[in-house]
Image (tube, rainbow, N blue to C red):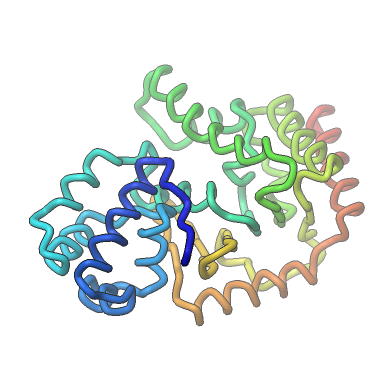
Length: 273
């Protein structure tokens, strides 16, 4: 008989209750997905506590299972501090065994120093208070706890050289940000590669991309633009995203060459070049 781990977090309890109600209704994940108008993979993520349904999905779950608004009401108590388009991604990061990220213009959030994050938030918030900026920075940099574990998740970081050159927050802030990335790579906590300007056109020029793999469910891909994001679990799109990442990685510098370039860029920022 299958031994299920006892749910620990509120999201896992939500997912376990969904699983129990689905089974009691005699529905498979595929059948419930058809009623909710989503993929069976997404239902499996809901039940594992990796993702929360959107409000419309929760209402359709209630209709499909005859639960009279139970899951929609419970969802209101599980809100995320992240923007709606990123909330599911933040949840999935905590469960992933492998994260492969590509950044086209700025340092990925999970690697950002507080000073770098502060400069980013200040740049696109024309009206703000110091308290609002501080709260946004705390939420952003809290994601770096992923790096506290020595083994999980394995994090591959692929950076366009433009990320190294754009001086965010001034010379000192940028230098410290790049040193942090290089130190993490040298310590073996992340795998680092840089796509140099000399590579010319490459497979990921159009978007930030994050790929996440899990121990017991299908992988996902995430792309992001200004104030919007798209989390994909369609197998064909995920495979295409992995292919594009592999193509771009094949054009990147080796880890040692990338480390040398990152440290060199940090020195250039320090000296104002």
